[in-house]
Image: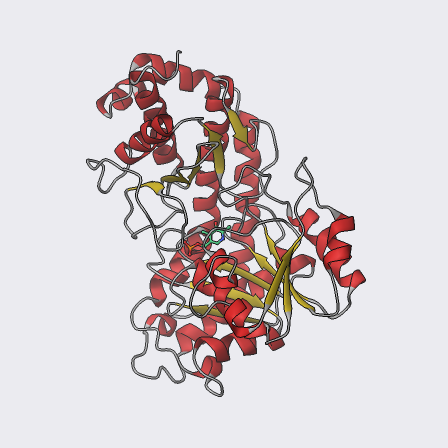
Length: 425
Ligand SMILES: *Cc1c(COP(=O)(O)O)cnc(C)c1O
């Protein structure tokens, strides 16, 4: 019966049976994921109740957006959920990179130095920081940058970090998720240890965590372990697939006040910014996020086990604990990346008939291939896979608004590789 359903979607018996065999071994993992979702659902629900979310919150405002109850209450909900003094949650933050750029440029002044103790940051931040030249980069404004690379096993190089901290160091940026790198993502506990270390070396440092793809994967967030700013995108985890746009920054009042002045204008801060008609989606998406994240995590665990068993290097491996929803699969060739992405695209509810091909993307140095058939353009909490066309030719798979859609995506990615003669089952 189920087999027939998948056959109608283009999955052959061989691929379907291979998948079922793997799934039979994942029951305990899936149960643990469901328990985490239950816990985080309670956390979100309580934050909404505590802040008296009401029907008036969905009305939206126009123009300046003065006294926007929905916007102000949503920011209180985020602050409660992340246990911070303040939050900036706005549709005017266009994407994750924008949220990070606001947080950095608001809290760094000419002569300050930015430190990444976890190696190279996410591709698009290279132009924000000025590692690659770009107009209006932090470098142009006189902010210098230093990084301490991870040790070969992916752990923190505490000696190098200590040496890198100097009298100019002002802000430390920690990326939780691997991004487009074959390194492990960090647990909230590891991030907490790193924050404690840098603040011990230099008290008064501001620490920002790029939390993209990490929200609701664990019981704690970086804001629970000492981050002064925790930053992410609403078209990833916390938007629950319903937010059509937006980003968030949660943290100390001092940092958030500066971020608000940078986002709008000095003196205007958080008081302006009409929410137009997106508030219902931002609330409802946040409410659904813990269960959507759970579905995405099941897809990631399934993908890891399918491709690990076929002999590919996968990060995290099939058994490891998860700290974000991303699954990296090192496929070793552009042709395999394309086949994998064709399968993901073919499983999408939207644009399933198009063929993804590598192309240049603003903010990225290499050509990038992206498979995404999403309700929200580029949304990567929805079923998606992408990767820069560069060695080791890894694809980064994530999302799926439901576990079943994620499952279909993995099965079809395998189907395309199988049909191309790239894997034997
Ligand atoms: C997605 C992501 C970002 C921001 O990317 P946008 O496409 O601008 O939203 C930043 N850092 C990491 C680790 C990411 O995964």
